[in-house]
Length: 250
Length: 118
Image (cartoon, rainbow over all chains, first blue to last red; front, top):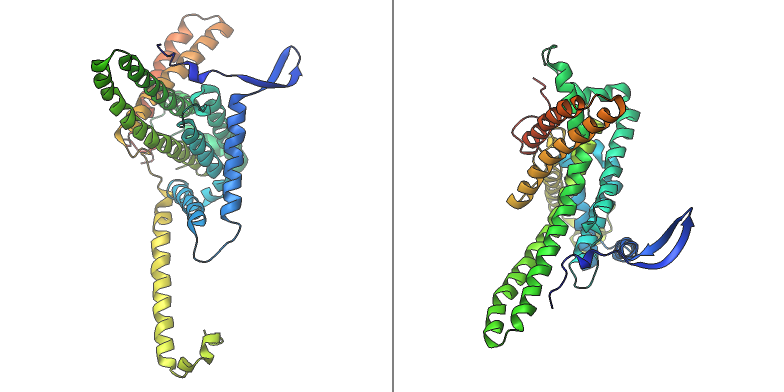
């Protein structure tokens, strides 16, 4: 009767795609949900902007609100120059948001609960910051690691600490999203399995089962909040890191 | 507004009202622009803390500290392997990593400035 709370994160091969050396590459359920998220976002944006009217309808309102939201986030963290990264941040934000929200539907798969997915997203941000920082600022990008006004005898130590702090960014960036989604989904599953376990114990069990049921309802609402919040936090941290690439000297 | 088609309608013979309306529209436009540009004016000074809720903040701060220590440990371990100086690389870089983690936390909490500019 007891349900394995980890089972929901299993990767299932749906059909094989290619073979690289000895390694078979298959189309997994994770890939299917990623494709679904990307396709649904694209379809939604195309549909909502298909008949552009001055007074927006409901769909167009949602599209405009999401644009405004991300644009304001970028403007308030990275300034006007950050707007050239709008497509990147908007893609990350909507992809993570849709992936998190779809994962909340029962029997679906949450792609952001896998560290490899969030790590890939965080590394893409990290590498963008590195490449763009060096391309735009050249060697001045190293100013990021050399704070001004530090006595010379302590400077080497500070530079080491700054470099380590910079290198730790993709880790904390990816682990935060992954840990939030993983922990939330395991908690939901555990409490939901309490309902069936208690419900099998007769009349008192059914009364007792209302407690975890109420908790699961509350947790689902909380998870809805977390799903949005983590997408937002991921986007805003992306902006803060991009800001370092745009103005490294500040 | 002069070549607006509305000028040809019967009310078009009251230019003062038209002028007042266009002045009001212009004022509204300016006010809207002010509203819209207010966030971007502060754009050069980025916001320090990214988290609107306490639980997200807690998660973020702990992740920052752990990430710093983890990177320090990884670098120390790699240096030990490559240079054969075990255990000194691990010792030094764990300590540096811990310092970097604390720095991350202080920055994420918005207590310290992003860099020591002044």
